[in-house]
Image 1 (cartoon, protein in one colour):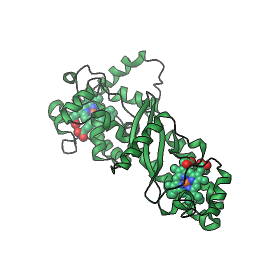
Image 2 (cartoon, rainbow, N blue to C red):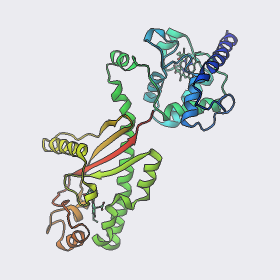
Image 3 (cartoon, rainbow, N blue to C red):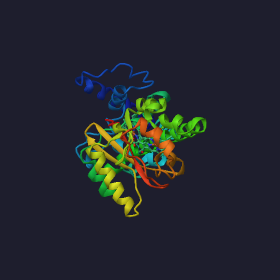
Length: 324
Ligand code: HEC
Ligand code: HEC
């Protein structure tokens, strides 16, 4: 029986391969034997050739499926294994040797039968699983609605979860680096020495995070020190919302928004702590006149003072290039 399924699988493989020839611009080399370290294009092609014959994102309706859509599979695995390595290893393990015990999706197993074993090597499967984890997958047009009916959750919200995670990580890493360096510089030479270290541009980390995640990372505020940090229209609205919520004693949450079809924005509040007050506190009190002179010299238009510990200082504004 297993042999037969394998044979069908191989046939399907051939079939989809020949059917895909018309999508000419994509490169089909390297998919039969080695798919190591897949580029976005290679990954998509590998899915089309090896997986989408059954996990078809173009299935016209829920009733015309041969397997759950790959976005649904990904969603299930991501919930169970948010960590990238765990996700890849569990998915690879199942695909390499599918069994009912390993299956995480019991309903699909009943409806479609267990997935047949593939002819791909473990390494190829692992590369495809990594691609699935790293990239946003095409989803059937009916899927969001179906998902919301079935699970009572907003699918679009779920999808934004990833950007929320990334945004939190980037903001967290940046803030940690910044606070550490600021404090060290403060010890070395007080405010005059440390003043350059509250500038994101002073951090190679920000630069490399931006490159790795294809992001633009900045901070903004309703009262800025550096005029470059002045908010844009959209940012201003979010800042005002945060300020209103803060005044009402509500919890301020990070926000993910689609700016345009190619761009996702992440926002999160920034508060001041005791330490920040040496440069952002009340003039003549927590912020000494002496220190403020230094700051005023560097930033003649400064508005970023008068804060107390715990106050809302501004927010992170991070833009991601939307993954396809
Ligand atoms: C011949 C049809 C077919 C092909 C081709 C196929 N699958 Fe599947 N797959 C299924 C079916 C049917 C299920 C649902 C039943 C199950 O979970 O075993 C499934 C389920 C899965 C699951 C979830 C298993 C679980 O935990 O329940 C993963 C992961 C998966 N497929 C990945 C892939 C990947 C990646 C490819 C391409 C390399 C692929 N499949 C190719 C039919 C297929
Ligand atoms: C040593 C003085 C100093 C300390 C301490 C300091 N800052 Fe700053 N802060 C500055 C300077 C100078 C700028 C302008 C940086 C630039 O040119 O981009 C700035 C800018 C900012 C900005 C960007 C928006 C704007 O006004 O331009 C935020 C947000 C901010 N600081 C928050 C904080 C927080 C939160 C802390 C405490 C964790 C802190 N700062 C501690 C000096 C300081």
